[in-house]
Length: 407
Image (tube, rainbow, N blue to C red; front, side, top):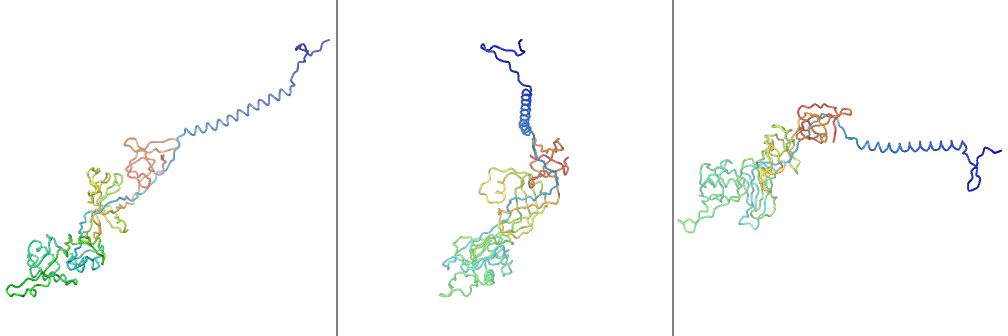
């Protein structure tokens, strides 16, 4: 009787047919399923991280800021003094002196020059500041005549000296006035060379000559205006050469001028207070805006070495020329001297947004107002930039506290 075990002949050998045990089958199936599940979730985890990074890279990330009220910071501009006339007084070595040396303390820088005063002295010879308003171009001596003598007599008369302001001759009264001018300051006026008395051979008219019968051109500085100030002076005991400038006078600078750009000029109005700073001294002068020009382009034909304030300013970048009237008149400045103008702002405040939030579409400026996930375009008009903020001019649909996109 045959058993139920089947048999196979393999190469002539009878082999039994093996069947797997049930618990092994179940164990393998469970392990395989667990491995598949684990592999799936590991893949999901890695894929989720990459996907999030990809999604983040596609997002429009930006910063925001709030709309604020802000005051304007002062507008400052580099400018130049203008309007001051200058007078250079040169040294002339006296014939009797071996060298030309400043022999007294000159008038101090900043001093308002008094007509008739001594500015300085070269090797014992004074230089007078005289208010001569007419021509003056030569040494003058007894019996000279002409328009320069008329101008000298008028100047001496204004000082209370015995000269006839209507006389165009250097007469004895003029000589007496000149002598009085020198004596009042401790100097002696020069006398003309004595001439022989032809009626009495061997004698001269020395005794008849007035004490002051000669006024050398080198000993007079003709004042351009009556309120000139000392701008610079060579100190006492310094040796100089003929022609060296030993003292420089300037008339008071009455105004300053600066080129201001199109945005900053919107903060400036006629009559506005201005602080004028003198570089290097720390001194300030009070002023006010006198006038504002129309827009001016930079010309191409201005000489690079121009020293006149107006000429130098015209070579500045395009903008508006702002003229400031100076309240303190007696300043030892010269035309073209550098100053800093600080236009004092009002206390008025304006809506402001960060300057980097301003976007441009052609000629139209706008910002993006953020509300939740939505953004709305709002047109704005910029008054000026101030400390990194754009101050808005005119009406706008923005309000304090609203959020705008930056960048």
